[in-house]
Picture (cartoon, rainbow, N blue to C red):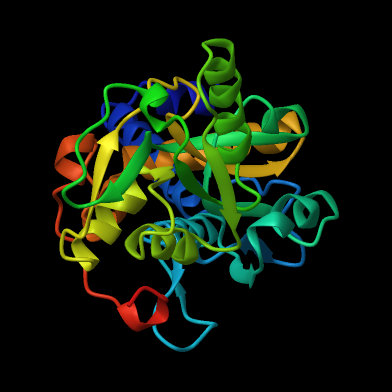
Length: 298
């Protein structure tokens, strides 16, 4: 019998080996916990670069008079993702129409701007959903609810330029024309604030936007607007983060979002901004304070 075999036959040997193995496993577990997860290819020079159009509270907006003080759900998610990957965060603001061209040109690695996950966008970019939502039609308080989109025939509807709302309303106009009705008058404005302003001033009958955004504005406007119809559009159900097409990067972003959801960080962000999964509750939620003077609505 060799000395090694003899040692293993001693009474204390098993206990010693178990202790050694436990220590090794504990050390391995600690190393794994301290090791940053794999970095996606859209992170360069230790920085996550994000493009956003900060005009859609509570998703992304300028919180106060400092145009660099961008806040909101998307910015909290971006900061949390940067911490998850152990990198710094760089945010660039721009008009909505510049977001996807900037992403395509590599001027940013990720777009986080309260943007809906839509099949037509996923032809050119990868999208990872992170929050439920719904498209809503909004008018001034006191306006009667609609029974359907056909009741917008001949009325002026405001939308933000560069969004998918114009194209979606154009499809509704095709249906109106086929039924022999006058089309909606679709008008686009550069920012969501201007869209809301048109409705409040009576220059537009209604606007198209997302429920989460309107839940926030409704509180800030003290109930001066209301949802009059929620179209049954299955494609307008999720906000998404967008990156350039890359299956590996998409998988890593999906893993990151899933981790933040599983460890409760996504829920904490939603709670901070008073967002609930239920649309009805969301439209009655109390929004946290921010500087309404940033917006142009009187």
